[in-house]
Image 1 (cartoon, rainbow, N blue to C red):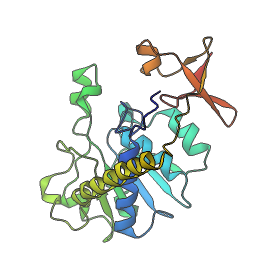
Image 2 (image 1 turned 60 degrees about the horizontal axis):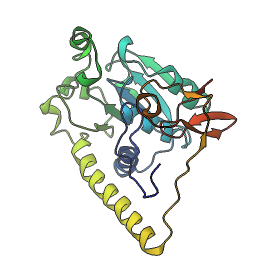
Image 3 (image 1 turned 180 degrees about the vertical axis):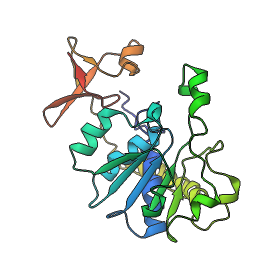
Length: 244
């Protein structure tokens, strides 16, 4: 762990905190609130770190409902459903079609299918075009629905949607610039004040390992460290449960 404050700009398929702050700001600016919204996540929900982070943040708000739109190969991991949604009483439903739910949504969060996450290129080719947002689907949506996308896009949102006033993804990019500027300024002020937060190093446990096979402590010469949360040991690097 570094004694110098670090801004997490995204770690693999697990989390993307700065994007989550950007997403929350965008939802607030577009809809005027986060509490009580119904948000659909569409596309790569298995590897999409922006989706994982935002769902974890939404669990802190009241009355939020989540719709998970993905093919079987890219469904949201069970540990997020159980550890975040179920534990925090965050209701979710799953479906395989944008058309059947878009009329109910306040936010549609599109994601690209990430080719770099696939070991089998044939499997990528099978799912890459599962969901494509176009004007015909947008015609089924609410007048005030907001379309978000962390970008870059591939072909999951057609350019014809860009001119729709509900297409918020370019405004989302602008919000991201201001969010990250604010984070950097906050760290600089903390340094000037001598009040930079000390990192939590957790506890080194030689007999316990992280359950995430892709965690840095399983891939590199890094000692596994854990912190306790609600009676459960979690990795300080990736937040996965400990495995004895």
